[in-house]
Image (cartoon, rainbow, N blue to C red; front, side, top):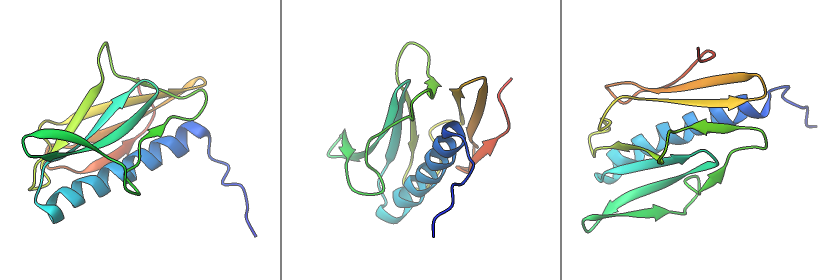
Amino acid sequence: FSFPSGNSPLEEDAQRFAARTAALRDNAILQSRPMAVQVTPSGYSFLERRKGSWSVIEDKPFVSTDWSDGVTAKTGEKPMMISFESTGLPSDQAELVLQGEAQSRRVLIAPMGDVELDGAAP
């Protein structure tokens, strides 16, 4: 049997993004290689550093993903890139705001690499 979760598309997208980003951080440590997530208003993709340049990863669970209908990310004028060193530390702390119908959610990347979902964005 399958029951609907009751979560909105915004909540599901925020949870999925946070979980995949945390898995990417862990993968950077396991593979001892810098990895990143690149976010645009319409979706996100994962990258790894190989031979001095960034390459898109298309292996599960790190496939490029579009946000659900009605969900967008506030990234400014250019895509947001959040990278993790081979130690799991982010290049910088980051905050991503996802917006849905009359709601928003924040995904925080802490200075030590923790990925957290925060309540509604101001």
